[in-house]
Length: 140
Image (cartoon, rainbow, N blue to C red):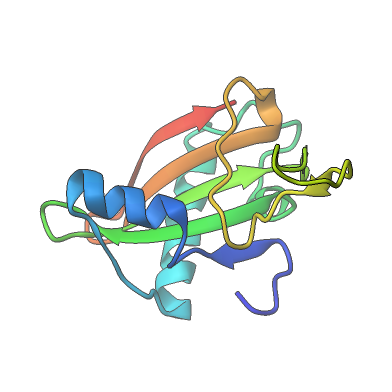
């Protein structure tokens, strides 16, 4: 992932902590081979017309999005990677306690980006590497 400026592996984010405290899901560190398998499964989703909301659905087009990869071990002990994707980096207002009035780009490389009702610019999908399946594709 280090060569892809639009992709990040989240292992220490607020979302990882939430998965652990809410569901007991532990994080794990995928290898390049694991990420490649996730992309292969994602290609299957594209072939199955799951990404028809895109003008030209292809794995290359999906790589044009900013992507957060959140790996975890589910309750069945299976290796899962959630891919959270967005086409632009939003700006966030300064903290209410800050004297600054300057908005800044979200810290997407360290914090999980959660957008509700953002349209086709935002999507996420869960990929189960042990079952070679994808599910919970959510747009917006």
